[in-house]
Length: 235
Image (cartoon, rainbow, N blue to C red; front, side, top):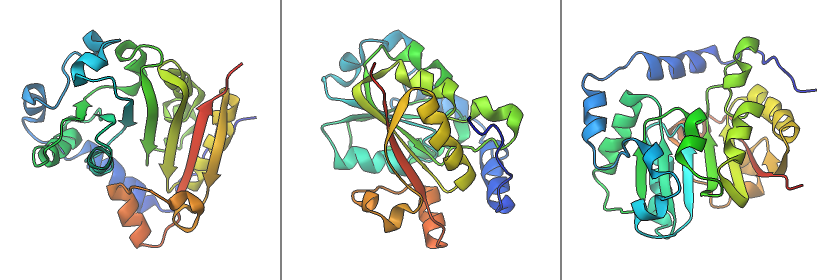
């Protein structure tokens, strides 16, 4: 049975800092800047089924849900020019910080969207995405908020509607309780966990790992990072 409850984080200071970063530091004019940015897809639902026309190629599409300031996905886009990347961030002030970094790079394989992840099936057609990254997502520790966790059965169902056959979801977190919940909720949602570790940086899964801003901070403090890779089970 899936564990519906998560204990409050042992490190309450870190959780408070995360919420403050997302909630309190609103940047005036962020929405206007995002609306006028050439790197942000406006009305993305109108692109459903035609993302090859947006990128002007048929390369695989990989998305990061909750990209934060964008370090992770922008490094991937530089390393893999033959893959198209889309960074998704629902908080405008956070996305704006990512756009500032993007403007300094000469890339043509990365775009952004300011949306809620639950609308992904309205934006991507079935099989249109090859990989989904979830990095250091909000753990939503209270029972009544379980369905908001990005590895909950509800969200795994969303991802399954857009992933291509053989596509994967890759999840990283420093939150042991959320990770243990995910190890149960993901298989219960009809997915197969292909690999996982409770200590990424001291495991074979560290090969080729690209770190996010949070990951760099936590790794510097000696905190273990959990990671898993999951694929939709085929019946």
